[in-house]
Length: 139
Image 1 (tube, rainbow, N blue to C red):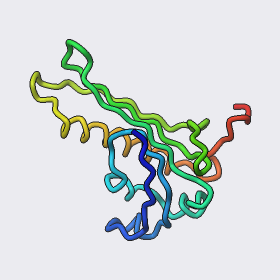
Image 2: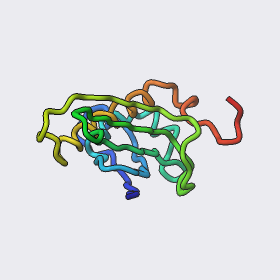
Image 3: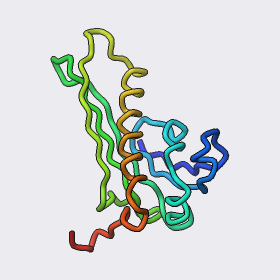
């Protein structure tokens, strides 16, 4: 399910408190409040919510007939309301061993959130001018 969220700059994190507002297209189960502290002022200065949005796709699951869990997160920046998949992607994939009977919605959400936080963090360490690449630009 897709959720679009406008995050405001009144969060408790000192890093986020100095960042401006941003818009999110969230295709997953995570909550913006669980990773908004990673968004930097330089990022929100370059990618303003009137033109851009952060794209987040995420999922976590246990493989069938297995105790192996997998989470994945793909994040990037896309033009506002473009409904595009980002051409420049920041991806995190993780695995974990899950004890039989211990996988539930809360564990899945925590695991998925870890992946999203890692992918967002990877995007924030790149210079903002290098975060976005249009689809028609060659690699």
